[in-house]
Structures are given as structure tokens and as C-alpha cells.
Amino acid sequence: MMPFNKIKAQKLLDSLGYYSQLVYAIKSDSDLQKSYQFFNSHLNASKYKKDKLGQAYALSYLSIIDFKIGFYDQSENTAVNALDILDQVKPTSYSTSLKKTIYNHLGKIYKEKGINDKAIINYKKALSISNTSKDSLVIYNNLSIVYKNNFQLLESKNILLEATSFFKRVKDVKEKSRVLDNLGFIKHKLNEADALLYLNEALSYRKQLKDSSDLYPSYRNLSKYYWDLNDTTKSKLFALKALNIANLIKSPSYQLDATKRLMQLGDFSVYNKYITLNDSLEHVKKTSQNKFAQLKYDVNKSELQSQQEKTKKQLYQFLAIIILIIALATYLLLIIKHKKDRLKQVYLTESRISKKVHDEVANDIYQIMNKIQDSKNSKLVVLDDLEHVYNKTRDISKENSLIEFKENFSETLSDLLLSYQNNNTNIITQNLSNIDWSRMSNIKKNAIYRVLQELMTNMKKHSQATLVVIIFNQAQNKIEIKYSDNGIGCDIKKNNGLQNAETVLIL
Image (cartoon, rainbow, N blue to C red; front, side, top):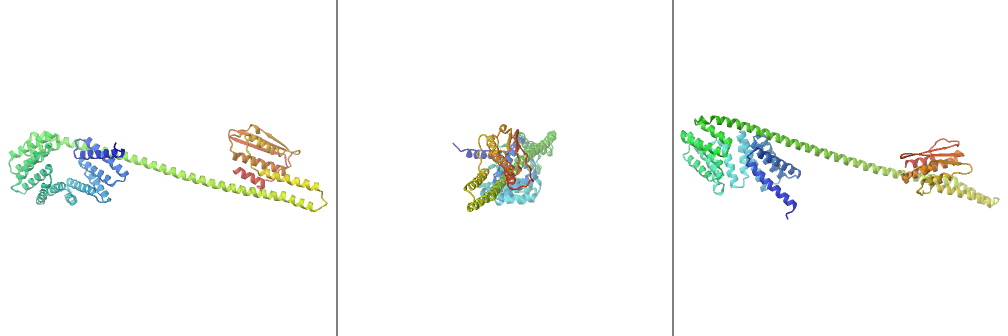
């Protein structure tokens, strides 16, 4: 079984071959439109893949399509763009062959626009890189027509004679007959006696072909030949043969040319047909150009919209990346800040513990040491003092120990608050057991525990309160805690315990 990529590549080659042939054998507007859409799509695909040769190939056929529809300026611009792209790639036999085709096509464009000097330049460029006898023969023939149109008949004849030197190496009867027909007609215009021999030889070649359309140029030139010799009978005979071929192949352009020729010969029976054909061709040409222009507009509009959508998508992706970067940076900064705050909290806590130990425990120990040295103090007094120091040390340890969060946090808080109750101070709590602590993180529980601990400690030390009331309220996801006591009050300064409480709340 053939791999998928190979199947896809083969389908592309088949499509390229089909539409490349279709461009040279256009039978309807539909053929033109389908070919244009295919090669335009191939151009975009080649741009996406950064395939320079693919781009140049697609542009060369888009240029040919523009030429066939009559958009010569657009055809010229497209062909020049294709050459510019080919100049950017390393020369190969394929790129050189493609370049030759484009130069030859530019020669046709300039010939139709009547810019003969540019047509000659491009045909000569094509000849300089032509690597097959058949291609050289075709280009020589095209070049001779430009010289003929420029009334340089001798130069035209010499070029055609050069073309005949390739006959032995070229088997294409169709191309050889074109050279012979043009050479015969040029010889006729130069009054050379063997002109008719070349014209008849070309006709003989063309009769061997299955394509009747190739007979038309021979019959037309033979009609002109006899007209110049004032033999109107034979001239009209070949003009009628040309008209029959035009009718047979149903070519409006050939029919128009043949009827015009007959009228020049005095046969005005075809006048009405000529007028009808002329009007019809103009209408068809205009309609075809309008349809094609509309198609190109629609395709370009679609591509523009697609590009705008692509640009918008890229912008959104860019903004998303920027937002993500900002979010990550913010997250990292918050982590760093959190670590700094934690370190600061640790430092403050250690400082507070150190100061507390120094102020409360160390001084008491110093006094006990003095009492021990004084033999007058009894052991009972010293033991009481040691017990007092022990209780202070235990309280300090309890204030700064890790909190073990039970399933019932209300019970943990109740134990904390009641530990400050004694004979002189009564602690009352309201609604504590009604609070749902299950949705609260341990970090927040820890903060609440430490704040309440600081409040109770400050109350015990400074407020001289005999009654403390702590009210807990819960509204949806918010918990409100109100503290009040009947103590003496104090000036609010962020020292020691209050500073620590604020640090805990920041967390």
C-alpha cells in the first residue's frame, strides 16, 4: 500500500498536470475560472511551504490565464513577479526551463501590446537558455512574427530559415508547418518565386494532422497570397475553405476573420453574419472579462479576510502569551514576597520570643540566683520562684508552639480562650459552636488562632479586665469576630503582640 504522503503528492502532481494542460486548451469560462482557482490555491500553498519554485510555477500559469482573458498588464506583472522569484533560487535545469517559458510568454504579451522592442528582447532571452530543438524552433517562429509586424521582413525570413535548421531534430509536424507557412508568406511579401512551395508544403503537413483548426492559417494565407496576385477566384476559394473550417471547429474568432476576408473580396452576403459575430464576440469578451474580474475580486477578498483572521488569531495568541508571562511573573513575585514575609515573621517572632525570655524569664532567674546566694532565703521561697519561672516558660512555649488542627476547630479555639480564664477574669464566647470551619484553610485558621491568642495575652497583661466577650458571626463565606472587654484600654501602638497579630493577618 502506498504511504499517505506519497498518495497526496501523486494527487498534487496529477492535478498540476491536468490544470496545466487545461490552461492551454481552454474551451469555456468555466475552464478559466477553475484553472485560476487551482493555481491561485497552489500559489498560496507554495508560499506557506516557502517553495519558491512552486510559487514561480503557479505565477507563470496565472499570467497565462490573465493573457488569455485579455488582461495584458496584469499578465505582465505576474510574469515579472515569477522571474523575480526565480532569481532568488539556485539555477537548475527545471528553473531554467521555467524561466525560458516565462520569457517566451512575456514576448507574446509585448507583441500583443505592440511593444515590439521588448518582445524581441524577451524572445532572445528565451532563446539564449533554450535547451531543446523544439523549444528553439517555437521561439524562432514567435520572434519572426514580431519582426514581420515591425515590417522587418528580411530579418523575419532569416530567423525562419534558422528555425528550419532544427527540422531534422524536431518531429512535431504542427510546429514545423507553422514555420513553413510563415516562411512562405514572408517570401511572398519579399516577391520570392518559391513562396507558394512553402505555403503548399505547410498545408500538406497540416492535412496530416487530426486537428482541423491547424488548416485555417494555411487557407487564410493562401487566400491573401492569391489576392496579392489579383487572382480573386482562387483567393475567394481559399477564403471559403477557411470559413468552412471556422464553422466546423465553431471558432467565432476564425469565423469573424473569414467573413471579413470574404467581404474584402466583394462577397457581402456574409455582412449580417459579420456584424452579428463582431457584436457577439465583443459581448462575450466583455462578459468573460467581467466574470473573471469578479472571480479575482472574490478570491482576493477571501484571501484578505483569511489573512485578517490569521493576523487576528496571531494577535490573540501573542496577547495570551503576554498575559501568561505576566501571570507567571506575578505569581513568582507573590511567592518571593510571601517567602520574604514569612522570613520577616520568623524574625519578628524570634525577636519577640527573645525579648520576652530576656525580660521575663532571664530577670526572674537572675533574682533566684541572688536569693540562692543569700542563705537567709528559705528553700520554700526559692521553689515558689522557680515554679513561677517554669509557668512563665510554659506560657511562652504554648504561645509559640505549633497548632494541631482538630476536626472541631471550635473546640480548639474554646480551649485557647478558656485557658485565660481565672478567678479574676471571666471569658464569654457566643456562637462559636455554630461556625462552619470546614471550608476554611489551615492557614486562615492559624491566623485567627494567633490573633485571638495575642488579644487574650494583651488583655491579661495590660487591660485589667474582669469580663471578656468574644462574639462569632457567619454570613455566607465570611466570618466576623468581635472582641470586647471591660478593661482600662490602651494607646494603640504596633509593638510586640499587636505587631505580631498584624503580621499574622497579612498571611
